[in-house]
Amino acid sequence: MSHAQEERHPFLDDLTADAELVSSVLRGPVIGRDQIRLAVNAVGSFYASQTPTYLQTVGSRLFLEYEAVLTSGEKLTAVAVVDHASDGSVPRVSVRMSPLTAVLSLATHLREALSSQVPEELFL
Image (cartoon, rainbow, N blue to C red; front, side, top):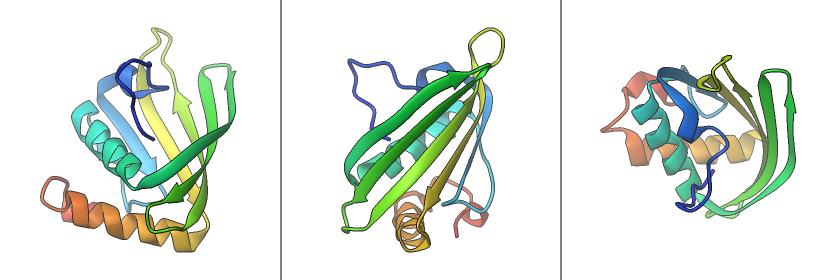
């Protein structure tokens, strides 16, 4: 998801220092506020467009669904589940994407962009 400076991001602004991000485009979790910001911003840079389709809070969870078109032309859909602690902070985010072709394309772009900054074993 892209992050405009003037708008509050649905979860990046509230991440805990030891937050965890799991995603369809990664083999394992990304841990830590700075690493998550790095990964989310990198993914957003591969979106030619992104359209939110659903946003709803249920209890302590925020559900955000969106459609995106990658810069390579593939279309994808995603749902982000953002867990909030009682103080409003975000300790965990899960982002699931489909279809597989777009997920693999995005994973390849992410590996190319972040392989020197994120542990190699996290990439597909």
